Image (cartoon, rainbow, N blue to C red; front, side, top):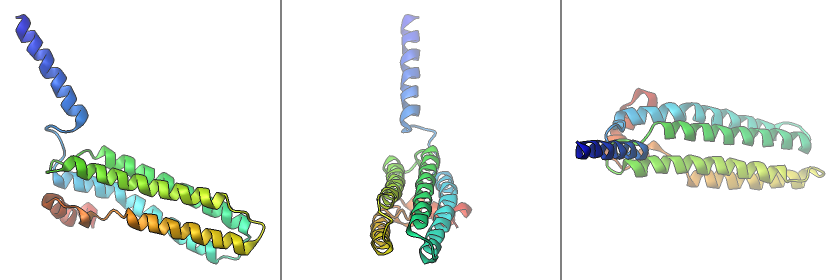
Length: 178
């Protein structure tokens, strides 16, 4: 009897480890995972698009450097927070039940972390600019935005880049991804 109880305990511990590591049965299918990821990314993309447009309008508006700084710092802070929300939602989607699923999920997570960090870096850089003279301030903003754009493009997460045939098909066909 003791051996049976011991086996049950070992099985329970192994099952717990499996669940914690997301490497066992129960991972979402490629279709379910792609749909969850697209649902997580859609509001993020919308918010980033709106913030980008506001930033462009801010740069064209006749405001003082101090006003521009305040608005840009706030917008980049909001973009960073949006990126973190998207990252958390993608993480909640789990690990797709496909070959190299853990690596795919980790790549999405790291990409969104890089996006968040790029927005934070731009916010810090602009926040550190002196607003006493307009030309040097706006030159500094241009450098910060250019750096952000480079970092953003380098980490661009395109669902088309996914190497898994099952995930490629899922991203191409899921209604949430259109």
